[in-house]
Image (cartoon, rainbow, N blue to C red; front, side, top):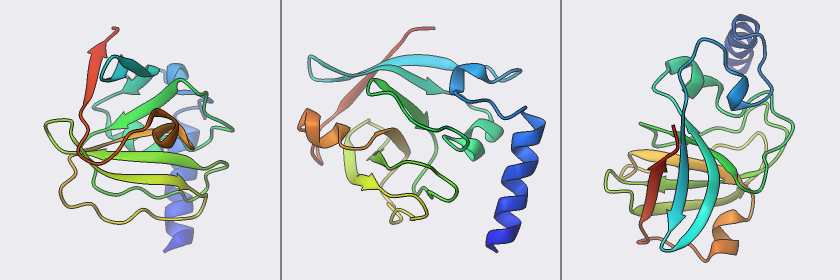
Length: 146
């Protein structure tokens, strides 16, 4: 199973010229958002796309994630960290953008739990949710930048 997944990822990377960051995705329309938690800016730049390839690749191939950067995957109820090089926080939200689960500092090669109530997930740098004081039941707001 893992060899198959790895071969699929390598195929996708070769087709997309292995972009190093979300803004390098050629041919894929990205939207950019600022993410707010109350009055506080949680993320200055959050990338989102309806592209299946964008969702499949996610943060794979990246060597790091900046403190104010993230990606929003929708729909999504579970993530994997196969072939990742750094830990992340995964903030799972329902359709109303209410936080239903926070996976804090998921390490490479791990899989998050299945979050049945989740409709989307915000992936950001490890420790970001704790630093912001984010907890289950809080609501996030996404404001379009593009």
